[in-house]
Amino acid sequence: MPYLPTIVLAAIGLLLLLLLLVRTVKVLRAFRRTASMVATNTQDRAGLIRARTAALRVAFAERRRSPENQ
Image 1 (cartoon, one colour):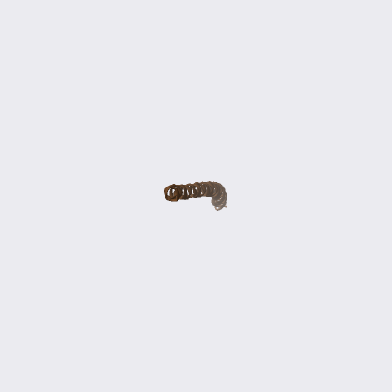
Image 2: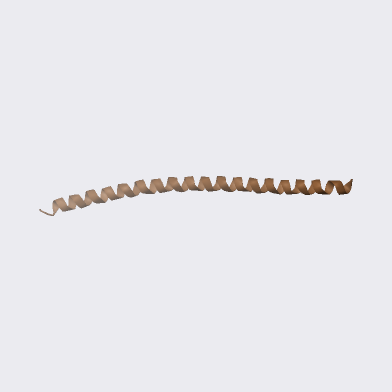
């Protein structure tokens, strides 16, 4: 039975490979979740900046028109 140690080593190698694969998938899932949260937060902040910029444009436009009406 000289093939028995080879089979045992192959089985252990497959188990280790499976364990590493499961850990890698967990890490990638956590990374994807974190990247998604960062992207969402960045988009929200960019939207707020765009809204503030638009509000400032409107305010400046109203201030410019104000002396014409007086």
